[in-house]
Length: 520
Ligand code: KIV
Ligand code: ZN
Image 1 (cartoon, rainbow, N blue to C red):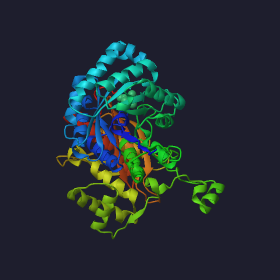
Image 2: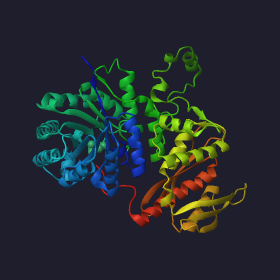
Image 3: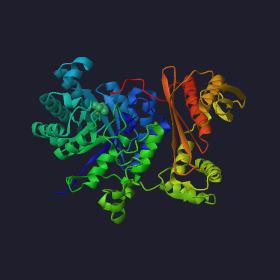
Image 4: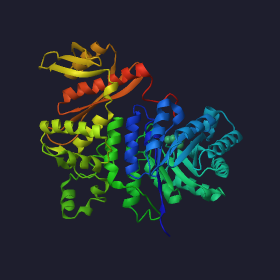
């Protein structure tokens, strides 16, 4: 039998973005969508349009620009949601409306407060309504794995009759285990007479660490779409990690012989780094496929075997996921065309003015550190693409910071406001970074709380660029700030200021990030 295509449905921009602290702005979502398209993801779930104006706009822009991947938008089983999703998807090359509705007893009684018959009726009506706008409609019975099996079969049958082209079986709370989940998929195949008129999809959460295993078990039982996210980010413990699902199918094609995916795996590593950097969710070192140690061999016995023959201890080639050591790409004397070539190879699309600016920054960095690695370029491009300089209220003028053992650290900061005026302030702190942040707070007048502070070296060597990520709270809002540089103290100041500028944009022009509605 010919293997069938396993549809990869990526929900990094919806379920992934929904988790606390991961909120992305429109520019960032667009950039991730471009990388997902480069990966040749079959379906990109771009967001939940009715949730907020920001969500609507990002789904709309992604639908307008991205070609090659289907673009999906999420909706509750309500006409106003479906209309909003249909509007956001108007310009998509290939749109999909994804409708969800709770079906388990627990959710029926305590969340939606509806009887079984009402749920079926709502689901059917929503599908029929969505089909007026779009031929491709997916239905998700939320909390499917805790729904009575016979009721789940009934809902599935009815929504397919109403026109659902994909039925997704979500393990919303990450409750199921692999054998049980495979059995559920087989049950639906045997007990839903029209099941062959729709694709069976699965959507697994990772509360018990089983999201990928459950998804793969379902594939063996006949599911032909897997919903997943890059790096497995998502609500609570996250969703099934796309890179793990895809590489399992590829590496064990002897076992998963019934399916294949169309994913261009060589872009996995770059996409993982982009998502990690933009969300501020670092990938654990030992994470399968994309962790720093995923292809490192430490023990003497392993190294000995590996050096003689790679497959003694390595089941995948790191090249397959684009995961070789960060390549040394350029130096001080590299020219503009070499830079343009490399930028394209890394999957970025830059306008001429962006490229000019990048070239200038590249030369400054090449003066600071002799060797420029691929990761340095990723960092420079991202820094430039995602810093909305015109929107910033303040930029860093200068920074002075003194530290001596036994003495209280002190910092003096000069910020330049948009009108060109300089604002200076000095403060003490528990450490130099704290002193800098206190001085910034004195100037801006905002009372912020630093929730998280992390420094990551972007490449190797003593002159590596450090990326500082801070999570800052002001009143009830949390934002991420980022700063990059060879001098990590300065980068710390820039990261904090980046977060402050986001708060200041928000207070002037309404929300730029985050959801107003509680997500599914
Ligand atoms: O986890 C879930 O049930 C969901 C649905 C909206 C598919 O995210
Ligand atoms: Zn989910």
